[in-house]
Image (spheres, rainbow, N blue to C red):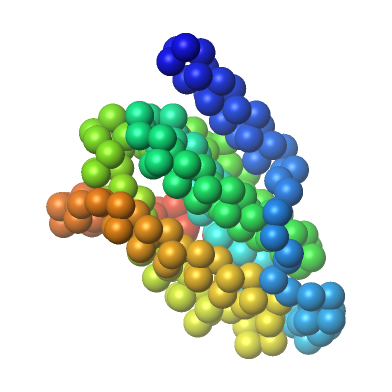
Length: 215
């Protein structure tokens, strides 16, 4: 039965991954920016500002592609049902983020990253590795990931055009969720990662964000 359950989880993750790559995620929560805010933002943006917003939201979309794969893999890798439920709940909220960022990119006339299959596959492998090390390390990895994402989103709030209140509302809502995910992982026993691991994560994230900004 354990093998069957694992197979079921792998197949479920594969279906979700396919939906991510096909660009058909569905948010369970409402889009953070209402129609009036979106129309006002789009009318106020210059062409250059629109391009910059689209690029920044593409980077955020890549982050959500990675988050989906990470948490799905960590949910598969743990034997603790409570942790599995937590990872899957976080993955569901990240799926909302994925749908929101994709919608905003389309509103801005942009596109998602051409390298999404690579980001997804690499993140899934990293999630399995983290789970393999152990639950406390896996939770620590989640907490550190979310802390770095929260800082990254704050940086985007500082870079987004002031007139783009629609993108700002999306990023604000995402940032709130990421902070809560980090706190939940730490409260459940996540260990602090060694400084070298944290540095490696920052370097990898920097490479990913700079690449996704253009490709």
